[in-house]
Structures are given as structure tokens and as C-alpha cells.
Amino acid sequence: MTRRGALAGGALLTGAMASGCSPFGPPRYAGTLDGADFVRGHALRDRMFPPATGPERQARVVIAGGGAAGLAAGWRLRDAGFDDFVVLDLEDHVGGNARGRRNAISAYPLGAHYLPIPNREAVALRRMLGQFGMIVGAGADGAPIYDPYQVCADLDERLFWRGAWQEGLFPQSGLTAGERAQHDAFERAMVNYGRALGRDGRPAFAVPLAASSSDSEFTSLDLISFAAWLDQHGWTSAPLRAYIRYCCRDDYGTEPDAVSAWAGVHYFAARRGWTSAEDRDRELTWPEGNARLIALMAARIGHERIIPAHSAFNAQGDGGDALVDVYDHTARTSHRYRADAAILAMPQFVAARICNQVGGARGFTYAPWVVANISVSRHPRGPGVPLAWDNVSAASDSLGYVVATHQTDSGTDGPTVLTWYMPLSAMTPAQARHVMLGRPLHEWQAIVADDLLGMHPDLAGAITRIDVWRWGHAMVRPTVGFLTDADRLLTQGLTPPLLRAHSDMSGMSIFEEAHYRGTAAAEAAMRHLGHAFESVLA
Image (cartoon, rainbow, N blue to C red; front, top):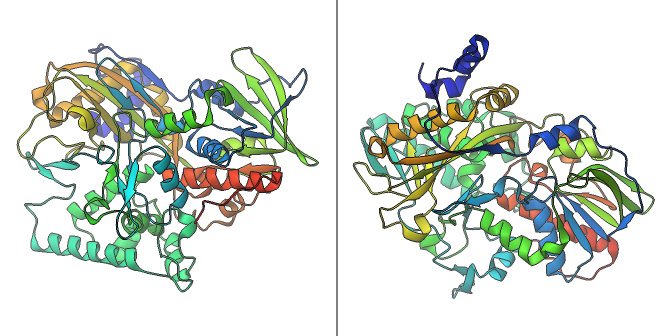
């Protein structure tokens, strides 16, 4: 079994743990093993925090959770001239799975690393991007014009296929006539779904999801797996299924036989970037990935309103007020906030533990991921097209890597940071989390290095360090039946003084959904408080 096979199945780790020896040898690289603070998370799970004491603290709005949704809520409050709020987060740094870091070479992402050019229906998101200087004007048709320095530089993506690099992520050579015909038929179907309207006049697939049609012709796709739906259409060729598997794991951290067909089609049919024709299928990206957006939202909110290292562990409505009990991990004491409204901007499995009014977490499952940032003394090489921002190998079970310096010095051959991604999707999430947390740094480093050197033997001797980051609950999984599940839909139904804001409410962990849910919760809070504003939601 290869190390990549061991990573996919977990068998090698299980054997090593049972025998008490490591099959990977001694550490070869400098680096760190880090991740979301599961110790603090487990303290919440196990209800280990002391009761709140001392005088109550006051804020008109308390936002519990400093990920993309919580920060979007704070951005919208400030955008509407509302200032009396705080943002609490259990981590030492806000950002959720869109955080980033920096080393001597470059800034780099720890998770989410790009934002597709937004759709026309993403009104609030475009408003924010305009405020951040990322939209610099409008064309004759009113479509926004994006700052070219924010749009991914050429080359966007490439695939290592049969010994050489090629542009794009679907093989361009060595296909049979039948394989090419299946791919073309699939692409035509996705284009048609992208243009389709439901009987309610809405797009069949939209971003944010709230703008999508509720027509059963399309929503019924949620009741079958994407893999089974592909089988029904006879789209079974190995290159096509490998490409589709990559896409499902890339956006959902989940295999096609678990992803619902609605979510699978959404990946291909929902993106209609509203801008000039040449850029509408492009991405916005930065060396640190979506941490750029996190930093800009935090700056707009004001760092004095952001309180890290504070775990909300109880939230309840009390008459017309919201009571939020919080543990301060620095002072090791608990205190209570009394607010006019509280926005619970956290995953459903967390919200269900701290508030008995948000419903349960049945059906909510979360994909574990490993992200490694590999510092190298020179850029990767290889036969075929030159280095791209996103680089994927057809022979690897990883999702490949993005180049942190692509936006700044992609033409040079000096040091860079390669951000490598692996969703642990071939096991159940619980099994994958066990594997992920049980494996020491040097074993992860060996897996990452072997995978990278399989793509780039020329990097032998050029790897200077490998920093590994683990996400136990990186993203909610849009499994079969989940998007139409009545229990999930109930999580959207809280009314003030308690509100919810998280991409979990949409069933897809993408930045646009987090931003939409945060914005919607902020506007609901302002309506409840009687603060005048004009809605920026479509």
C-alpha cells in the first residue's frame, strides 16, 4: 500500500498504532502541527466551563462566532451605521476556516483560498467588495469591473496527466472517442442547468442558495447521490468520474457517492460570475487566500469590538433580551452578556450545544481536512505548461497545491510556499478525525513530501519546512437528502432576540453562503432593534 493509499484508508496508521512503531521514519523537515483548537472545542462539548459570575456585561448585539458569517454580520452592522456590538470567538484569531498565516517567504492560507467572481444575485457581497476596492467601476451594461490585481493571474490551473502538465483540470489528450463524448455531454447538461429557470422564475441553481428555485424538478435531485445520478445518465468514463470526484472533494470534502445530485450539479451550474465576459469564470485570490477578506472585514468592524479567546457556552432568550454566557480562556473566568439580540454565528453542532432553541444537529456531518504549507527554496518545474496557481495531479489522492506567491511574483524562480490540500473523504468523518488527530507531525510531513515529490522530483532537496494544519470539522457535507431535510430547514427559523448566521444554514461551506447568512442575520437584528437601514440583500 502506498502512503497515499494509507492516507485515504487509514489502514497503515491503524497498524502502526497497534504495533507501537512508525512506518514513516524520523522527522525530515522543520515545521509545526496545528489546527482548530479542539481542546477548547471539546471543553464546550463536555460542558467544562464554570458558571458565569460578576456583573452582567452589556451590548445591544452579541455576535458569538468570528468566522466568515460572524464577521459578515459585524461588517453589515457597521455598514448600516450600527456600532453597539461585540464579536466573540473561541480561537485566538478570528476567521474560521478562512484563516491564514505568514512566514519569511509569503503569506499563505490555512483553509479557504479563493472567491469566485460573484453572481448577479450576490448583491451584499458585491457591495462589500466595492468598499474594499476590489470592484473599481462598472461597464456599459452595469456589470462590475474588478481590479485585475485581485483576479487570479494566468495560468489559473493545470493538471499533471500522463507524465506532463497540461492547462485545465480535465485531460486534453489520450482520451477515447467515447470518453470525450461523455465529457462533452456532461458539459452540455451543466450549461443547460446553468441557464434553467424554475416555474417560480428563479434560477434552478444560484449563489447564494436562497436565490435558487424551489421547483421540485430541480430540488428532487437532492434525493439521489451524484454518483447514482451520473450512472443513470451513463456518464461512467474513468477520466470524467475522476474529474467530478476532484470537484466534489474540492468544494464539499466529500465523495460523489455521498454528495447529493443537487449539490453536485450546483457546483457546475450555479456560477454565473457577473462581470466582463473574459473574467466571469475567474477567481479572486490573494497570497493568504480568503484571510484577506477576513482581515478587511475585521478592520471595518474595528478590532476593539472583536474579542478572541472567548467561548460562548450558553445562549438563551430571557423575555425580550438575549443572555450569552462566555468563558474567557485568558482570565479563566466566565461572565454573562445581556443584549437586545444575539447572533449565533457558529456551526450547527456547536449552536445546538449552547442553545436549546436552535434545534438539534441530526443530519449535520462535517468533512475533516489536512492543509500543509510547504516552504521550498525554488519554484516547481516539470514538462508541459508552466506553473499555475492551482496544480493538480491525476495520479494523486490529494487535491494538489496552490502557489502562495502566484499573485505577486509568479514569473520568478525563487522561494515560495505551496499550500497542499487533502480532504479525508474515503473514511467516515469520525474515522478520519481519529486518523487525523492520531498521526504525528513527521508522519504527515512524510505523506505530504512524498505526494509533492511524486509530482515534482526536481524539488528533492528544495523543501525547507512543512507546516501542517488540521481541520476536524472543516465544512458541512451536503449529503443525500440534507439540503431538503426538514430539520436543516428549521435551523433557519430562529426569531429575535436569538438569530443564526452560518453557512451550515445553507448546507454548503462556501464564502458566499457565510456572507449571505451573516448579512441576513445582521439585518434581522437591526429590524428587531428598530435601527433604520436599506436592505442590501437581493
